Length: 296
Image (tube, rainbow, N blue to C red; front, top):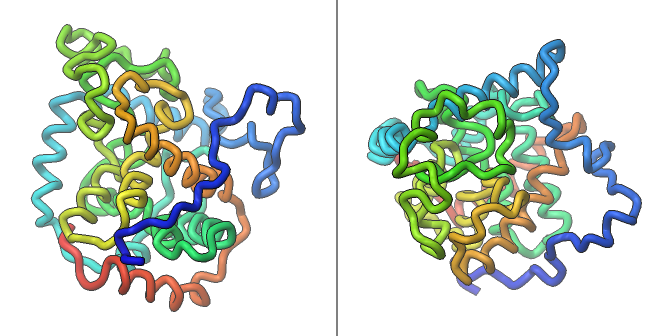
């Protein structure tokens, strides 16, 4: 099987049936499922207040014009040159200000995600590597980009904001696109079934890493690239919004994003992986799929 051919491993990936509500709530990494992604506002809780401020800035400033300016700035791929491993090591100095579930360095989350995928899908090495690198676009935070333009859930700009967006009712009041008739309707500047790939997403690490991998001709399959590009698009893959933009291919790819999400979200814990012990295995995958020094 070639590196660009992904095995069919999604035997049972489905959206939960309503009857699941009658079953005991699952526990992941020592927490109830409902305890993850808790965005209740509490100004006395420093973590919750940090998260709220990050999203407030994001939802105020992520406009069509802003996203276009960031793409013009970053997609020249002339910022720096770095290997995948070196980029991962940089994440040891990054704590995601939008994440209510962990305050550990991002490199810990990278290995937690990768190892949980490896346990469930031992023969899909491309999937293991996808879990390891999925947040590498966050290196933008070390080169002048504020975290509100790097981390957090993504959403399309240029159309109405969906109800399932985090802090939807309190954080978009000062975003000028909300008063622009070109952008504030259901379809905005798009058309029905135009394809998720044709939406202009809020600028962040998902789109950036996806573009970096394409630019550097990585050998990861399209399923991996889709997971990376949309893993933070929670209003779509968790909220069920924006389905009216989907093509049949998007619906098929959504299954992969949902499969990835289980390992991205529900593995965040204080249990630290032995990163030094794991490096040799993942270095072989980097050499196989994304070797050498990349242009960022």
